[in-house]
Image (cartoon, rainbow over all chains, first blue to last red; front, top):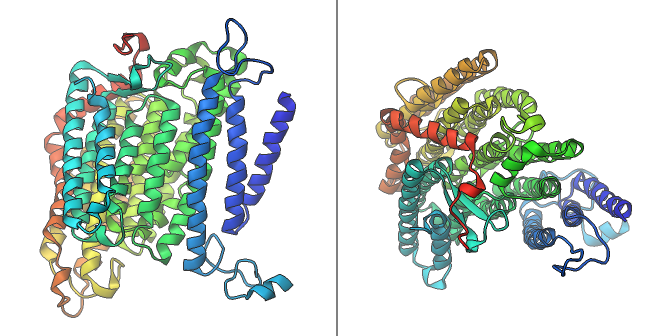
Length: 125
Length: 502
């Protein structure tokens, strides 16, 4: 189980790094979302993975470490708020700077992030 | 006052919540009064805390009376209390400056300002790593909003970089936390310091990975090379008071390194002792080098101030890398000095900018200032202190660091970096002053409302006065720094703390 879990986290981080290295703010926000999923899973695993154990406490039996669960819950809430903020900021930047590039400079021939290219032309490309 | 340690967190929180009521929306004067009262109360609480912690040692506060290491512990040791007082003084001056009109360029300046303060104070007080993460996020989200306060193209773009970069930094922080929790089984800093010596040897590589990841995270906050690219752009793009408040933000990163890398991975950490310091040495020196090039290349006063902050962070990180009691004490004194005076330079840049018409704070020939004498004297004091010329505080701060370096045998690493960066700063600041005050043409602006508002002058003067005051009171201040540093290095034993009586 640990192996599958680790591979899942690894694949997600790989995908998110790929997305984070793009120049468009939207893909970066997607990458951040994926990264926060991966991080949450990783954080959850820090208490150790166990099957068939009580959720919080049991009399003498095995029980899962409750602290990482609390930490993940906090991390999810914070990550959610931060992603929402980043998304709004990306939209604002698209409006202020006129394109979707992180550096605010449109790349010639890049139709995806360019505001001056009309929607149907974008659909054709 | 058993609840005293939590007051520096609670007071800004209450103030911020009160200020969000619709009643205050159209009442700027009331907003400013509430903010100022809140800040003064915070200063009193912080000062009291400093007094008590210097007299009686660290004051613990167990949230909800949950016994540490199970509950969250706040620990007001002299180091934390000194940083709290520093933050409160800085915040008061900045809010006085902002009260002249900068706070009205958008909504909710004052609540955001106080939330930012809540985050910073919390980060200083907490003794729990996850709680530190939470306070980091609070101060970050407030800083994101403050950064774009007032709006504009340049700000949006700077904010975009800053926000995305810090979000990735937060992800790193959580990964490091998870690793450390797995290794230590606790997130309480004193508890971690107690356990670090007896870790089984097969788990050490994991602990090392976690500790180094945290160094990266704090390096992002502190603008350590190569993670410093956000700094000049962010500081130069945002509004003047916000940039001045951000002068404390890089110091939060340095402070966290003290808390974590100096205190937990200190001399008693066995194999993990001085973790990451062999990386910090070259990076700190390179931060100073790159910062110095930035200082020479700056074309406006605010870029110059931002690069001076980068250099001062590099200098502080040298004291972190030296990692002995005297070096940390020197670092504490230097933190106080450089935070107050680089903030002063930012505020002064705002005043100069307003009076030079189109030229702003760029180093070009422009019309003379309306108040050349007042601003000139302030500039001279602040510049001399930042460069490190006697008789002002920068001189004492740098001598203190160089002495510590000499005693621990690091002369060849530390002295050249500090002396050469000082020389470079001197050249850049004298060139800046010559251009801004003497290379003038035409007549001063006729526009009388460009004259510095009295509250702006008071704000800058409080900060500029710290240059002579830090010298006059250098005796007690260095004693306090030594005491703070000793407490940091020695650490506290959880069982000695009288908390969680249940």
